[in-house]
Length: 287
Length: 261
Image 1 (cartoon, rainbow over the protein chains, first blue to last red):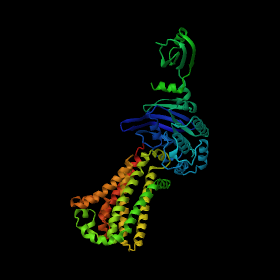
Image 2: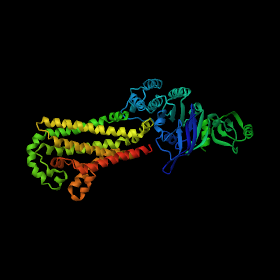
Image 3: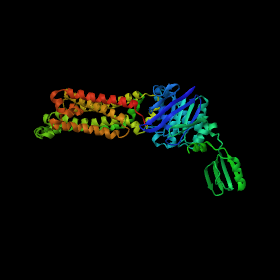
Image 4: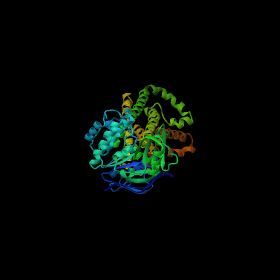
C-alpha cells in the first residue's frame, strides 16, 4: 500500500518556485529519505503534505486520503517533527506533551514517559529554558508519543549530540520494524544512507533522482586518494580534486587504464580507491 | 475545548494585569466620589461652558454631582478606553501570534481543523472579555454600595452592557485583522482601539463628521446619551454588530485558506 502518493504536486509562492510536478510514492513500512540543499523544496513538500500550505496544482494523498480534503483525518495518524522546534512560552515540557496529546484526544502519558526517559528529557523543565537540542527532544516526543502510522521528520537530528542521535535512530528503527512508515528529510546524507531503504533527491523544486539507496550509491565513479607524487593534469573524468602536501584526492569517473598508467609513472607511496559515499554522489547531482 | 483552555492559560497573566489595573482605577474613581461630589456641583457650569471640548467628551449633558453622571464619564475613560485596548489587543494577537511566534507549525500539525482553531480561539477571546467585564461590573457595584450610594441600576447596567458590546465589536474587527497578518498584532490592536476612541471624539466635535459614528463603537457608549435617553443608540449598535460579524466571517474565510508560514 502506498502511504504517500504525490501526483504532479506543485506549489508556487506567487511567482516564486516552491516545488514543481513532484511524483513520488512511499510504500507502507518504508523508511524513505528525502534529500536536497537549502531552498530545494524539501520543507515546501512537507508543509504541503501536512496541509500547512495549499498546492498550486497537482495532488497528493496520504493513506489514500486527499491531503486537502481530508487533512484532519490524515494528521490523526501522522507524527511531524519540524526542523525548528518552537513551543508556546511559559510551558513546561510535560505541558507541551500533554497539549499535543490532548489535541490528538489521546492519553499518551505512558509513551511520553518512556520517550522522555530514553531521550533523557526532564518533563518538569520549562521549554523556553531548554537548549536547541533539548527542545528538539520535546518535538521528538510530541511526534512519537501517539504512535502514529506515518512519521514525517524534517532535519530531525539538528542539535542532538551523537549519543542522542544514536538513541533517536534506535527508536525510529523499532518503530519502523513495527510497521511505521518514515519520511526522513535530511541534509546529513549518512543518516539517509544508514537508515533509509529508498531516497529521492530534490533540486530547484524538482525530483532529480529517486531510487533505492543502494542504487543511488551505485556509480562507476570512485573516490581516489593518492599519497606521493603523481601528475593527474589532463586526466579526464576527475571531479572534486584536492591536493594537500603529498596527498591528492579526487572523484574519478574516467578510464581506469589511464589512471593506472598515471599511477605507474608517478612516485606513489600509497593509494586507496573506494566507493564514494552518498554525500559525494549527492554533491555530484548538484553540479 | 483544548485550544480554549490553552489560550486562557497562555493569556492569564495579561488578563490578570489588565483586569486588575482597570478594576483598581474604577474603584479609586468610585471611592473618591463622595469627596468630589460637592466640588463637582460647582464644576457643571464650567464644564458645560467649555464648548467643543465639553461636547467632544459629552460633558455638556451630564451632571457630575450625581453618581451616574460622574460614573459614566470616569467609566468611559477607564473601562471604555482600557477595555477597548485590551479587547483589541487580545483579538488581534489571537491568530497572528501563531505565525509570529512560529508555533503555527506545532498547532496545525495536529488533527484539528482550522475552523475548530478559529472557533475555539474566538471563544477564548469572548471568555476573557466577558470575565473581565463581569469582574469589573461586580467590584464596581460593590464599591458604589460601599461608599453609601444607591446603584442607579438601569444606567449602570446599560453603561456596562455598552462597553461590553464595544469590546466584543472591536474584538470581532481585530480578530478578522488577525487572520490576515503574521506579525505586528499588538501594535495594530492597540492602534485600532485608540483610533476608534478618537474617531468618536472627532465625530462629537463637528456635525460634518457625524458619519464617523457608524464606524466607531464608542458612538453607542456615550454616557450622556445612555443617561439621558436610557437606551443604547440602536442604529450605531446595529452597524457595530455588523462590523463585528464581518470581522469574524473574514477571519474564518482568510484563515481557512491561508498558507501558514
